[in-house]
Amino acid sequence: MQEALTEELIELCHKLGSTSQDLAILGEGNVSGKAGEDYFLVKASGHSMGNISAAGFSRVKFAPILTALDGPDLSDTETKNLLSSCRVDPEVDPQPSVEAFMHAYLLSLEGIGYVGHTHPTPLISLLSVDGCEEIAGLRLFPDEIVCCGPATAFVPYVDPGLPLARAIRSSVEAFIAKFGMVPKTIWLQNHGLIAPAKSIRDVESATYMGEKSARAWLGALSTGKDLVPMTQQAIDRIHTRPDEHFRQKLI
Ligand SMILES: [Zn+2]
Image (tube, rainbow, N blue to C red; front, side):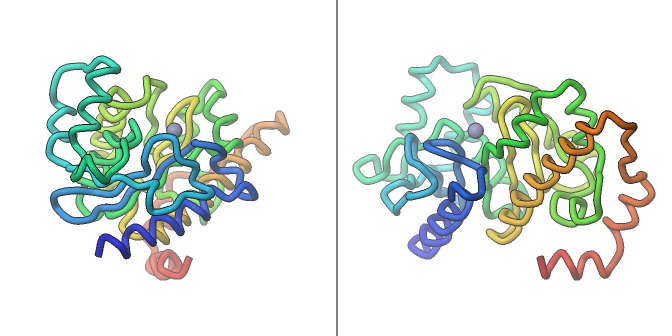
């Protein structure tokens, strides 16, 4: 099972890390997948998604990472040591990405099997614009709702690693309380996109559509004219209609 998961994650990385997609270059971004109740696979620190191999993934135990989310703040050295000690087999598993904290949290949520994190250039532009938090709650076109959900969870800029994982948890908990579902897309201010999903295919569609959505927003904002986002009634209609659920399965 672990070999199959590794192959799936390699394929996902190669797609998301392809230079033609403009979602992540060099060491940017990371992906993860749940290997069972005890541990998950996450991209190791310093690897490039575009050409990653099996050696670029680390097996990380859930329990100590999730415990740290409720523990005291950690220094950079303590963080590095904790991540190092959470590896299933330190002889084999490389040092995991510092974003293993947020991957562990998101993979612990009901129905989430995979997480994709990217830095799409148009989304970084949008997430550097005043008012981007409000934009996260709006929708411009129906397929954005189908792939990215009825709204996007928003996380103000914080330091990557444990502080970011805690900020993501608080944003996601508020989103679940409001919408009754885990967000399909999460925006990180001045940083990028997270797509937590049940399947690899859903991670891909949320990521690709999230990137398109950012381009649509930048285009609309650049006209200087008044914006006409979809009404809440139209969003709710698309989000709940049965044929859209059918389309969701096809995308
Ligand atoms: Zn990032």
